[in-house]
Amino acid sequence: MTTTILRFEKHKNFVNIRQAGAHQHRHHKETNNADNLRTHLNRTFIGSSNLGLDVKTRLDTLTKQPRKNSVLAMDGILTLSPEVFIDGTKEEQYRALRTFALASKAWLVNTFGDNVVNAVLHRDESSPHVHFTVVPIQENDLGQSKLNARDLFNKKTLHYFQRNFFDYMHKYFPSLQPPKHNEKATHTTLKEFYTGIKELELNMENYFYSEFKQQRKDLQEELSGSIRKNIDKWLEEMFFDIGESEKETWIEEIKEELERKLKSSIDFNSLYKNIKLRK
Image 1 (cartoon, helix red, strand yellow):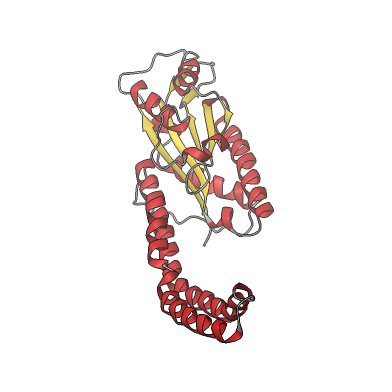
Image 2: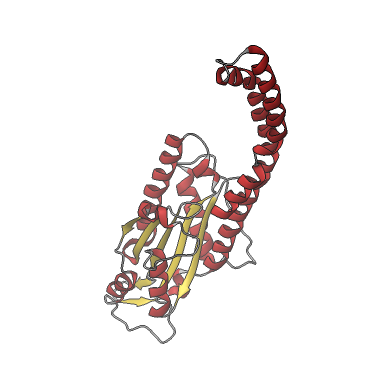
């Protein structure tokens, strides 16, 4: 079943916000769960690469100073089930990714307006997703503004966001199924999301190795058979200028030696170990 995925996490201080920004915009030399060779594919489509500044700029519009321990920002992730991005041809995969990115941006702007201060598409992890940040500012009829994460991101609104995000994406991806909601459960944290990503990567790696083990025996037999079929031709070409009796003796001895070596020459165990070392 393919579905939509939406996660939120609270930030109550700028230390956490800057840490989130460093992760989202890859400020560190190494980033957990990310492939540095694909980081250049990431795209920031709302805000800048300075998340702390983006949040502060929005907070500066407040007419009422935040209370101590207020939620300054909500960090979030938008994505779809991994199958959406890996099924089909390369062209279909690219089209799915582009549609997801554009629809995600539109949904964020339509849903949170000026409060969404930053959004970046990550393509350097195991599954594409959008990281976004919302400053929970609420305005009253008099134009006064204050932080109010309690009302803007409570249990009722979180479930609304889940349903609304699904409805929006379903227009572009009709095969999506509604996400399952448990009224008694709290929403999954971003930490749990990344734990799930790591489990997915491990499952994919295990699948690759199990498939490799399964297929290597058949491949070895196929290659060995192909070599045996060509041995006579190769030897004839090598000894074309030698007398027939002498050539026959040489060929038989070499074929016996080749047959002994053939069983071990295609060393798939070493190949398998080399692949693991490269991971």
